[in-house]
Figure 1 (cartoon, rainbow, N blue to C red):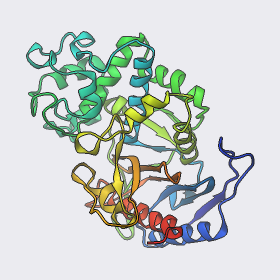
Figure 2: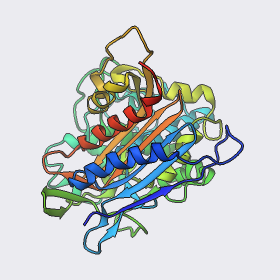
Figure 3: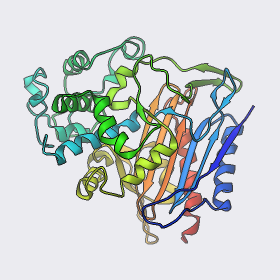
Figure 4: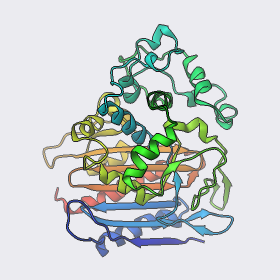
Amino acid sequence: MNIKIVLLNMVFLLSVSGPLYAQPALSQSIDSLVASYEEKDLFSGSILVARSGEVFSAGYGMANRSWDIPNSPETRFRIASLTKPFTAMLVLQLVEQGSLSLDDLIVQYLPDFPAEYGADVTIRHLLSHTSGIPSYTNFTNWVDTTSRVNVQPASFTELIASKELAFEPGTGFRYSNSNYYLLGVIIEKVTGMSYSRVLQEQILDPGRLGDTGYQFNGMIIERMAEGYERISSDYYEKAPYQSPSTAYAAGGIYSAVHDLYQWEQLLYSDRLLMEETRQQMMTPREGNYGYGWIAGEAYADEVARFLKSPFDFSTNSRPEPEPYRLVWHRGSHPGFNSLLVRVPDPRWTIIILENQQLNGDPVGTKIYDIAGEIFSILDGRRQP
């Protein structure tokens, strides 16, 4: 049974004096598109699309298949690596406060890290995935053993530190969950508080993000979607368990589409970070990666390709019109996929949270197709 919950939102933005509703044409076009994926059992989750203040949000498919509970815009999902922009923001807040520097060596905060290369890795390297530290999600026995146990940051840091570098720090790019795990440990060392508490006090409370939080092992979360794997057209299984403690600052946050939109809109103000720092965070470097965000330029018909292969993507230059500037991140966890795409000019936002992974497609490429088609709908106002 396909069930859909749609909410047309009234929103107040800093740049306008009153509420704006998503226009019927925009709502119907997006709803029809996503519903076509839902009808083929290719999507289950929640979406939010905003265009210059007009907001459309909807839930598709089931949050819980055992009880036939449908997804809605208020459903919460694990956002996996979409946690990384939050972690980067916490680090950059500490930089603004003068508590640390991007060029600090990690051995200042992680003294047990091997001296032979720990003395060359900086916080900047961790933020930009240029440290050379391999990702723990690629370690031997990760899926079957390590990912399922409850770990502590200290012992897990030792495991990460025991591996050899893939390249000399600052000489290459390789996306690595280990980088952001270590940033979480450094945040704790600098503040003297847990990562979850710093997240709550520095982002969630000031941003009034009541549907967002850090997931602990065994935690019961209201309105939380169950993660599923679609094995065949009529057969689903619960996604394999992975301990939230192994995700930590690299992927341990849960949220809902409206909270993510509210947080994303705060990136247009100085409320959480100053403008200069925000620009620094969203400026692409090696691999189209900034500090916690992927960024680059793409034409509307290239967006899906950029989302699927971000780290080696380059746009095909054309005389007219100018390409769009995209700032975005994605996440994937067994049973869950997430995507947040922001287009600062002309201020568009696409948020997709999914609680279903297709057999053979664990990184959720279908949501990139959906996002690309939504982008084309938004681009309809723009003449070629």
